[in-house]
Length: 340
Ligand SMILES: C=CC1=C(C)c2cc3[nH]c(cc4nc(cc5[nH]c(cc1n2)c(C)c5CCC(=O)O)C(CCC(=O)O)=C4C)c(C)c3C=C
Ligand SMILES: [Fe+2]
Ligand SMILES: [Fe+2]
Image (cartoon, rainbow, N blue to C red; front, side, top):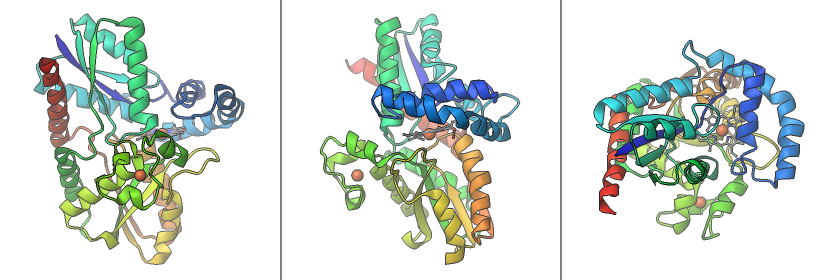
């Protein structure tokens, strides 16, 4: 029997500082997120970051937390429920960090008689810190606890027409009538991650990411962000001069991909962008990074820098057209089981 596991990043179990600390410890001690040797990672995470960040992050989580819990988990559950109505195989969810874990999600499927799983990492673009770590974790769990099940992974879907059509339509409906610019703010990654995962060692984090057809693109997060932006603005008929791509949420002292979202928001008001629309297509579901960092902090930065109207465009969340895309991508992979 087949089944589907939807995997998202995960959130702390509550907004208590200790729960946030436990979550950040698991997240940041992942070698695909902070890719230093264990001892240096532990010194940085446990010796520095976890002393101050949990309290700050807990305050931020409090501002977005709902009665049902973390927005990211609540929305992932909504996607699961809607998808379950459209497909005739069991659908469960699992989080890369904290609960419900990937292991718990697989166990639920196995308890329903599932032996072949389509696992969907809910990230449009590939990154070592997203898709890759999800697959690593799922393989670790499979080998340890479920050696007899098969898992078929859905690959990043940034360049699938059904996805970019869906995103473009969603943005079109939510764009305000008047805006001077549309900003695409993607979660950032350290530049080092891009070089590290480039099998061709040709990406220079510059023009090569915007070039067409380069073998490095399959593992280039930066290219994949540009590709989504280009597809969407073409479908919306927007001129490039009205569009910006920036990268948010940097952490630590490494050089992260530029330009930075916060610096851009602080400066564009003075450059004449008074009415801004902003969208975050690295996330399929709204979460701390969109609801607090962009909608609250980002808005303040923009207004402080001379901007006047800030319009946040929500993620795809549980929109019906997005659930149809999820269904199609899952069904393609479910059908592959019949081919082997
Ligand atoms: C969408 C893709 C994501 C990438 C790429 C990514 C890389 C990445 N993130 C951190 C550090 C943090 N991220 C945090 C929150 C967070 N990150 C993503 C997604 C990506 N991260 C999401 C969806 C969320 C929100 C989770 C939620 O519960 O809503 C946090 C925790 C919050 C905070 O303290 O600010 C950290 C820390 C690194 C270091 C990294 C790449 C190396
Ligand atoms: Fe992150
Ligand atoms: Fe590139």
